[in-house]
Image 1 (cartoon, rainbow, N blue to C red):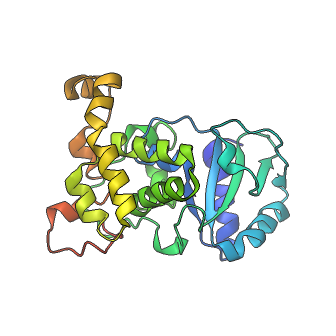
Image 2 (cartoon, rainbow, N blue to C red):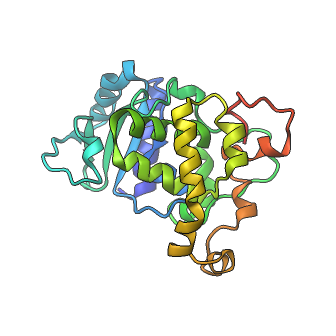
Length: 250
């Protein structure tokens, strides 16, 4: 099955079983303008329903559990979690508990598109999913997604989580203003890490992208458009009266 069909099948099966689910990993990074190749489909569900979610997918006859024995440094964080293979073998589906990246309860951290007048999607996600299908994908809000990755690194020394957090800073052009508004309820350690990643962004830009003009010429999503990606948290910067505790804003 092609990637989008596998995702739809997984989400539909979980929905039929009344199990909330959120896409994480490489696809969620693509949604937030990070250029990552998708190796596996990573989905988080409530921790208490992880076993049931696995059982539901296997019962469809389209997935079967596999035991992956070898992991490289990039995939080590997936070790020990339910990994399912479709009849076409690739890509794999990996299920995570929502506690792993601190997205619990998962149902509270999924982007809502309701009432958003102007929507823009990154080139990265549109290279993967047709425009009219993006809203069918339950993506995490950027702020809790970013915080979860930072916490994962700080509490478990998960290097890949730190890399992903850094890539979100670069891909979404996150700055101190965004951090002050969206990370106000995060721990001091998370805010300190975020500040460091943001302060180092310009040096990474110079090394990998060059100037903003070259960045745009290379076909990357414009900074002004990044602010219109649903779930980004940028609308809070335009409306100071909006509560900084509300991760559910655009």
